[in-house]
Image: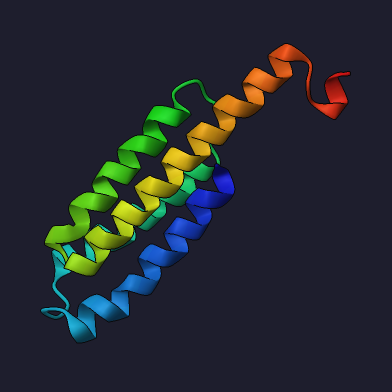
Length: 108
């Protein structure tokens, strides 16, 4: 999950040229929104051992989707990111279930 947040932060930073050139142009709140979101994702990558980290991660995804107001492409990237997180949560649940049943090679 930490690696996913770092990659998402890179994607958010790569959205800066899109917003500036293709979008309505740079404004302080558009640039600030993207920079703060990227910083929050990087900070979140370091907080993954905390109990509340999963809620923090999912909250970041909601904020990412809300980036539609900055530029529609940012909102679309947020939706793709949320689909990725849904898949990660599915994999997490499957691995936990297999561990509980003793089906993983390391638990035999």
